[in-house]
Image (cartoon, rainbow, N blue to C red; front, side):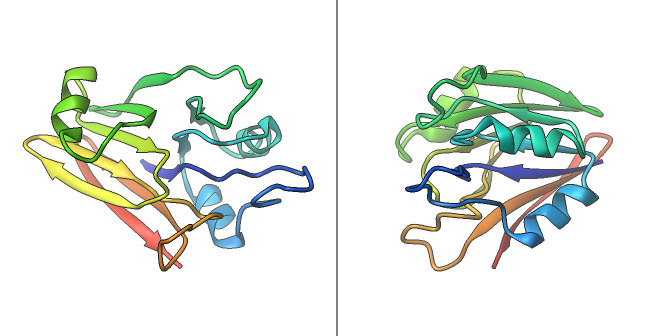
Length: 161
């Protein structure tokens, strides 16, 4: 199973939007995937609807998702892997322990908000922030994540472009 992992896309048709669409390479990744995980700041439900016409999409509410009816957290299982999703994982200091307390049964936690890619394993917890494929802020490159799941094994990677 292959997941595309997104966060902080901020896609909207409004005049002051950070992005009007996802980059072509992100759409290609979505087409190749079995599902998409979006860790918040979608901004416009139309993006989730467009993704859902291609593959299942699982998204949480971000601080810029005004008016969207999304949960603040999700807990999902893909094959034998328990995956949790949250937008704001709080300060960097203490994050792994905080996420472990929030999601005690998770093998993987996906988070967003910072626009800073992060992929690390702490003890037995894989923590992923895909960064942003549309608003890199101070990062040198745009990014998104991919997660391959085979049984209980995961292979995460951040795509930078």
